[in-house]
Amino acid sequence: MCKYKCAVLVLLGLALCRTALAAPWQSLGRPATPAEIARWNIDVRPDGMGLPQGQGSVAQGQEIYDSQCASCHGSFGESNEYMALSGGIGSLASASPQRTVGSRLNYATTLWDYINRAMPFQYSKSLTADQVYAVTAYVLHLNDIVTADAVLDPESLARIEMPNRDGFTTAHGFSSLDGKADVENTACLEACETQVALTSELPPEFTAQIYGDIREHFRGLASMNHERSEPLVVTTKGTNSDVTTLLNANGCMACHGIDNAGVGPAFNEVAARYAGDKAAAELLKLKLKQGGAGSWGSVSMPPQSRITDADAATIVDWIVSGMEEN
Image 1 (cartoon, rainbow, N blue to C red):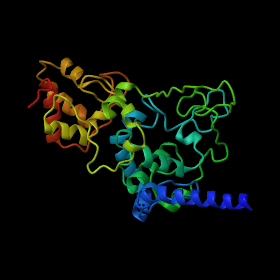
Image 2 (cartoon, rainbow, N blue to C red):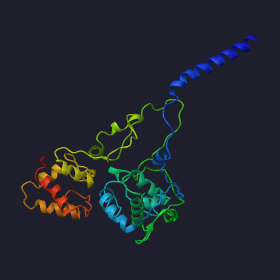
Image 3 (cartoon, rainbow, N blue to C red):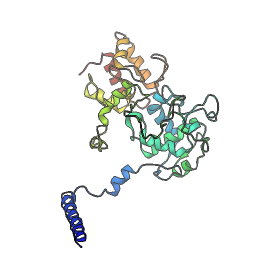
Image 4 (cartoon, helix red, strand yellow):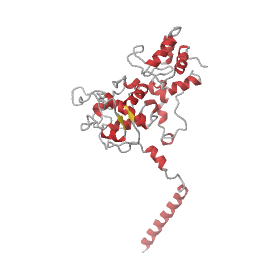
């Protein structure tokens, strides 16, 4: 009988301790609101579930693509240094597979989801739903999957049948044609790896100009996923406030650094090349507005047709003056 009484007393004591320990934490936190949950619940499934209302045309997508995407992915999706977006359809089973959006993806909704989450690289999640539909339409058009007059919305996007709908595979690198699978490992019980090195195919100078030391972004959950009250602004040294605003607003720092080259040349390299050239300002304003390639290698600069003449002049005058701080 004693052992049963003792057991009851022990259990009662544990319950009381648990209650006492839990009491200070009972008021910690609060239930998430539907609006807060909605901001996190952005995944889009293959059948289109999760797609928001909106629409966008191929023509609208081309304008956004030329200003935000072409500098990395090429004017026609052929790639300037990074993942090609077009071509290669039907090549995956050949001796020279080309893994692109058109040849590799099995659902068009996956393209929408990725653009919405991660693009453009320097300002992810900055596009509206309509803009994402438009860019998705244009990239699909580059692959001849939709026509030039196509307008996509949740229903029409989900109906698209991709060329590789039944042939999707993960046995390769994400963007490298000869790369290993993104995740390729064997479960172990002994002699397991003790350290894992994370690497990136993006040039460190490129990411440094946008994010600074990227390791500072992964210090633990306490420093992650905080909602910003102001848009992310890339600060630059040696510029006045007007130029800093223009460089950020027009995405210039996504490809150019002050002292370090990214996809394009560093601004100090441009200033040095054209130092003393009286015709440089007009030439650079024309290049800025119309785009072009050849002056700094094979990577094309997309036309910045939406920038005003006044803003273009402010940026170019700052460069040719030696990036003087006002």
